[in-house]
Image 1 (cartoon, rainbow, N blue to C red):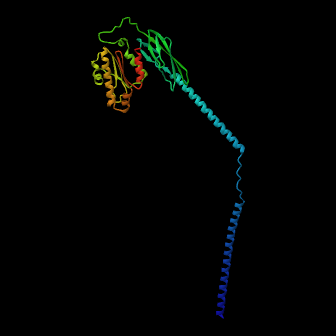
Image 2: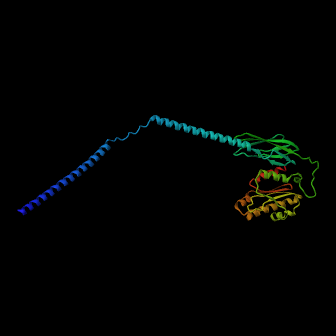
Image 3: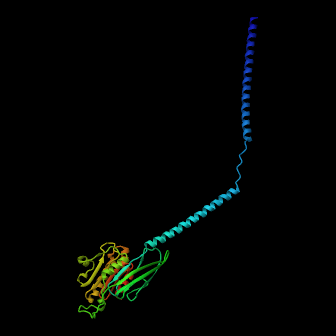
Length: 330
């Protein structure tokens, strides 16, 4: 009987435990299901909220605004063009004012000491291409040609006027020309030294030299005398001269020289010309060293004479200088 009661008690306990477990599982399952439902509801609500959000409408472009902006851009462009035009006009005016301030003649008052003496009037300080017209007030005292070469004719004073046509012009300049010397009443029949008739004219070679170097840019030159003269122009020391202006350069980069001589005896003219030509030949055949000076000595060197006067010039404007030299004896 006791055994039966024990068995029944054990069975009752087992049933009680089993019932408790079943209830716990159901509660857990229900809680989990409830939680899952909550999550699903939240997700659905969020999805619904997302679906309910409407995209913001972008404002339509206003055609009137576009027209207004285009008009403003056009106005700015027109203003820029006006500013550019004003700047260009101002620049042209500034250039013109600058020309008027810097333009000048190479000479304004010149004294010539003998008939045939000459110099060249040039307009300086102007940029670009300009046409110059030269006129002389009294051609019986001095003459002027289309290149501005003024030549003395007879004692007196006159004025050479220069009119320049060009951008910002016209410009008007003038130069006083004083022909100042006494007429020679001697017959000038010659001398025992063998001077020819061309040597009787009185020509100031130093004045001519200064006039030329004021018009044309020469390299740095120095007067060759004594041993230096003999070293560069062998034989010149043996020549009797009335005027001797041998201006040369001892620089390796030698781009030019300028020599003017009046011999005492006309028989020495050819000798001086030969000495000058020998100098040129030496420089052409290696003495000039560098290509540019060699070309200068080759193409722009001249040896000329008039009466007892001999000139050697090496310069890019050598032909103009020769013309001016010959003008001394007209």
